[in-house]
Image (cartoon, rainbow over all chains, first blue to last red; front, side):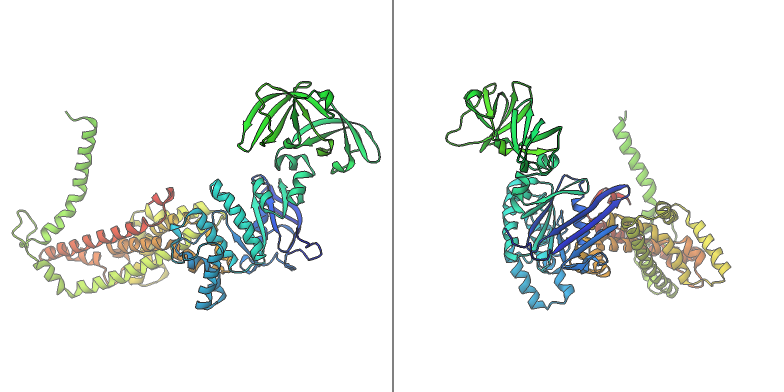
Length: 367
Length: 266
């Protein structure tokens, strides 16, 4: 990824707080966003991610904390003087202006000359794939085109940071997936820091360099997509990003490197201490494993280590993969096992008795 | 036997005839050859319209009316824009009572507004002129323009304003480049409605005008002379048609305001 760690972050938030009445929308959030990163604020609706974006844009004033963009304190700076531009959720295209006037809107204020302006507008329209649509009226634009106009209008001002408020949520699935790739490529091409607000974990995972997962106004974890998926630091993050099966387990013993656990369903499981984001001392913990990290076979449990018997209860077909809901025979506990389709795949049937197995290293532990 | 539905249709028809047929008498007698306002009519003539062309006091009254109507429509619309904008954009203490208060002239008889304003002006020691009429008409027009502009502003997507600010424009620049153009159909509709209201208004103008009459006040004065009655009919016909054209025009612009539930308010 980027080796930006030495560079000063382009956006710094320090203990930022914002309430609406009795509701704390943003609760003491601190984070750094590196120059040139594609950074996502991910969380369920109402978690404060949009408020955080609007605080960075300047549309909301924080009650406490610091917002520093490009080494400058921003608290007292109005939105029109901040080095940020925003793509709004509904795109906020000016309905009485055509494409060219929309895209050139900010340049007029800057006093850019007529010829220079047209040149810049045409360049940026080319970049977002709207070449030649200069005179198209705002009302005649499709959803995807509106989004491109909103992007062009913001990018033409060469902001230090581009803010995107759920820009893809209004598009249908096919177009959304295409725009995800385009946005990502565009971001790499222009080299501007993007901050994306989204509730769609898949979108965040595909597009971002870094993701901040937010719940109830606070940031739970900031990490790269892979890190977030493989090493979530809390159960909440683990179940929000993808799926995870959780099992209760009691600590049997702890030595220098490993923790030995006993789960009623899984039996004895030995995890390395590094598999726990927070090291447990004693008592009971929960361990989680992703559906694709569980394997099914017809062999008996005796021949496979780390396995137990289960029955297939439900089958969901996804085209390229199938998800099975399995019930462990010993405890009636339910887990989800997903299998990618391949040439060697076994066609499991409803009610089949299977042996579910795992590698202990695939677990993540939570206290 | 009439069934229910036909009865209702008949009822509406009778009501419409009852309300609007008197207005139709105006053109009938305006084009009537005879000087006496009674049936049967005695042939077609344009002479009463020709009479209007030579009436000097009428021309003065027309000029006064246009001046009052243009000024009142402008002031009323301006205040209506401010009220509607404040109402749709900001939350403040006493917002609802303030709005109701502004809308009161809609339900108070004009006679009472006229008398009340007259007393106030007298107490203040101000002399009556066209400006005092404008004051009264502005008061009368403001609720209408407030309602029209409210429907324009309530349909206004706030993120468009934020987008303008985000792209570097100031608050005033945003108002000029975004808000005004977007609500311009409402502005035009409000102005025309205000203009029409002022042009046709008699009661307040009657109380507040000094020595310069407006058109309705002039017409009222002419009723004393039976000889002038046919030409008053002709003038009334012109005003009727003019008002209908203006109100149709205003409705045309009002419908250009993007539609939601609130645009149906007036």
